[in-house]
Amino acid sequence: MNSILSAKGLEIWFVTGSQNLYGEETLKKVAQHSVTIAKSFNTAAQIPVKCIFKPVLKSTEEIFSLCQEVNNNADCIGIIAWMHTFSPAKMWINGLKILQKPLLHLHTQFNSDLPWKDIDMDFMNLNQSAHGDREFGFIMTRMKLNRKVVVGHWQDKKVLLQIGVWARAVMGWNDWQGAKFVRFGDNMRYVAVTDGDKVEAEIKFGFSVNTCGIGDLAAVIDDVKETAVTKLCDEYAASYKLATSLKKGEAQHQSLRDAAKIEIGLRKFLVQGNYKGFTDTFEDLHGILQLPGIAVQRLMADGYGFAGEGDWKTAALIRAMKVMSIGLQGGNSFMEDYTYHFENGNEMVLGAHMLEICESIADGKPSCEIHPLGIGGKADPVRLVFNVSPGAALNASMIDMGNRFRLLVNEVTAVKPKQALPNLPVARVLWKPLPDMQTGCAAWILAGGAHHTCYSQNLTTAHLIDFAGMAGIELTLINKNTTIHQMQNELRWNDMYYQHNNK
Ligand code: MN
Image 1 (tube, helix red, strand yellow):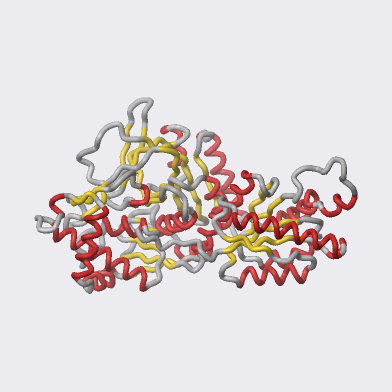
Image 2 (spheres, protein in one colour; image 1 turned 90 degrees about the vertical axis):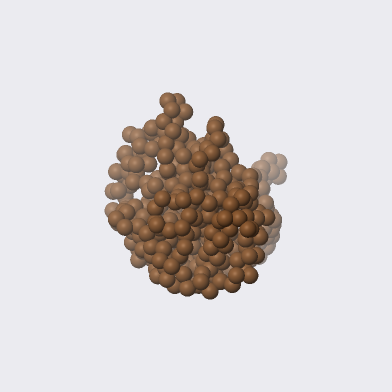
């Protein structure tokens, strides 16, 4: 795999609020403390991006100018704000009004413990975040600004973990701003949930979605050199358990070459157009020999967002989730709730797609196979077939409610298939939805969740809650605590809330 994803060069700025009331000596100490904290965040394993100290802010003008700098600096993706002393919050109004990047409010204190014997008024005046941060919190709440609040000593592992989760959500959010997604062909005909308002999505999320005729892609594929195809086929043979019929000199080797040609052409098209993800549809493949299978699986593994049948919302979500999880073990894939195992007491979902499950979630070396597809009327497509390892995971689905977007999350437990599936020609995963099959599936259906999702092994609900907060959209969660009664009420209440608060 050749990942196109990187967090290199991304920065979170560490911003400390104070005022001129305390004199030089105190402000010097405030700055020293902030430098120490920023440096420790900069090297913390839990935080995936650089953390940069910024000079202590003491006035309306300094705050406004810092917020301008944050907006204009391409490396800075968000800020951590901490009121070490008391920073009167009216000074923050104009700056916060223009701030366009996510903010984490860190409610911490330089000292962990009270210096019981030595505490005096100097200590009290220097370490005032207990009330300074409340003043700051008030103005953000008063201005109805979204932010994450993290409380605790800055060296506490739980605090570092929460900052890291937020920073990952910021990475995904930052990646969406100005991102381009391409659809080869339109939506699958008559399908509702995969369709939606692309204009509203661009306003809300910052990415654009546009369509190219499949013929434009076919032309790029046709142009691929045979030497490049041979090289990629060798790579397939080295990376996967290649089915005998696909090997050099065997009956279906030409199909492997056709698949490799599609991958090279598709990749070239995406690079040339600076696209971060794409969709295709089996209904519109004019000029393409096979429905792209292995090509899509490998492009997803390299970091491109993808979804089938023109589902641009899922493609964009998968891209964001891949960016959020840079450097983490495990993967994120396009997924579809495909078929059920309704054995009493052992109910589970078999998730798969026609072909396009991302190699990043494969348990072990995939096999590269060729089988008929049954729909689409094209040649048999080459695909990677594998199982997925057991463990905690989640499914996330972005849907368009007409007047807003909803991000729906179901926490699940993936399980090892008890028996072999020798005739199933696609990558697959078995999972048990939380809290149980009946409640999990009923809640999903009541919430209008799609059959397409991003299946994640390495992100948690916490990442997606922060992400939805940045986007200003609803997040509906189905987990071990969900009951249908509570879910129905939450959906009704949210309908009311978003009628009044949809910016
Ligand atoms: Mn589908």
